[in-house]
Length: 127
Image 1: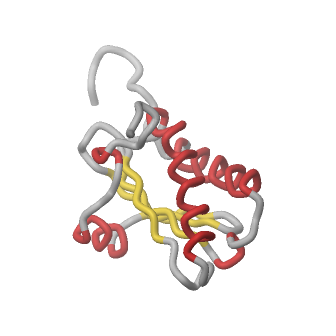
Image 2: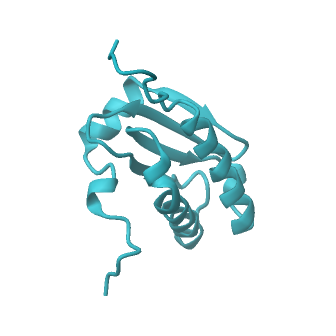
């Protein structure tokens, strides 16, 4: 049974075309064990895509654990992020790390992404 805490489909990058667009024309941010590619969208909210390859871990249970943690972290901060499509990828170092370490790494990525958010215009005239 799905609850209100789920990540809605509208908040996910799902199509192959969107993933391809992010691969070819996007900005990059990264950390020690996670990195991301992003590009602006006009949807009014951020969307998340995940790319956790077998190179990270041969065990599906480990890859799925990483994805669960990433989705949960994104769900908590998605309303504070700029309007971007985002694909997060894990490096091999992410495998076997405690969940708290991965969540801390994600918090650093979110801070870097928030820094890209344009400030609200000052004054009454648009430029």
